[in-house]
Length: 359
Ligand SMILES: Nc1ncnc2c1ncn2[C@@H]1O[C@H](COP(=O)(O)OP(=O)(O)OP(=O)(O)O)[C@@H](O)[C@H]1O
Ligand SMILES: [Mg+2]
Image (cartoon, rainbow, N blue to C red; front, side, top):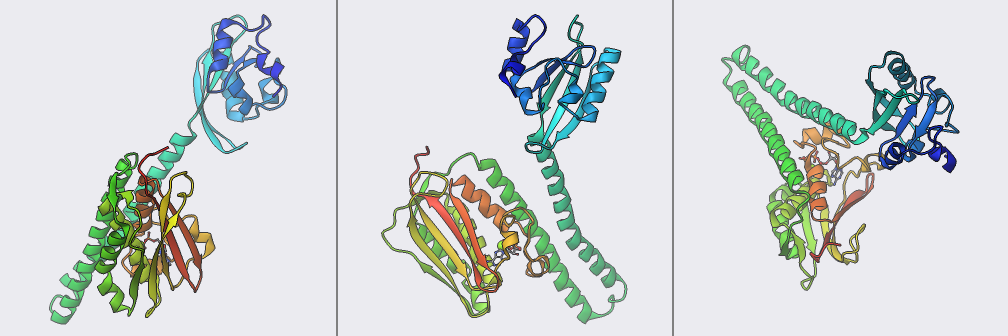
């Protein structure tokens, strides 16, 4: 947009009002009775195209809903609002208020409030509730089905009763895991802006977490091998949360790793933590397993995202593990990287800072 367009105000030039409006962060446009642009502030340059001063709004802004409310406000003298979405330069949502003005020159003022963030948050919340309901509904419908069977066809069959009760216990545990994970996620999210401050020996955290999963690994004839030098500086973090991070990563590595393979955990100094200037350590968890196709990698840490829905559910996963990992790593001002080769295996690398003085 040309500079003289921005400054092209009313016929009398800039007035104190329009000088103030120009400072406004939201796009503001003043129209006369003929729907011609009398004034557009600097922010309006983002939504208007071409030369607009003194010309019909339709020539520089083609959104039919906005043109319609502009006409109605000019015609009736009553203010209106409309929700619109503008595709370029990036998709944005605006709440447009068209205010009727009681002024000789200006008949209407359009104010564009950018509500992109709020709309995205609303959408995410709705998606999240839909996902949680869906995830809870499947174990509940299994439970209802089992109850019906136990009341009817299997009422007098002791063998079937035991089998169904065991399956019911499993479904109930799945629900309980889901609720634990949801609570964990919400706790970490609320704390995300507060950086943890303990100094921790990462080698100890990794070895004790690996030990918790030894039995599960042995069931698949697997081993978790921790390769960590003794003289590394302490990381700055929260012990329980870091245990949760590595428990999730080791659990996935065992779950999705091939029988008889080794899960390797290697700690190396990483200077600096990617995306920051702080020195840190990097902890790489590598498995030899099914791997993850490239197209899934970017979305893997989203809640309930599963690369292989059937397999993950079969293994009792909630699909929240990596979302929790991601939030905890963010809270630590660290970084999570994922590399994978289908059929070969996967490496999750966690970078954690070793100094607590934020930039
Ligand atoms: N090491 C891995 N190898 C292959 N796929 C993996 C690996 N780790 C995670 N995935 C994929 O990423 C998805 C998300 O992992 P995440 O840990 O969030 O969920 P989950 O393991 O299904 O459930 P849980 O909440 O119990 O951890 C998994 O469903 C799986 O498809
Ligand atoms: Mg998992």
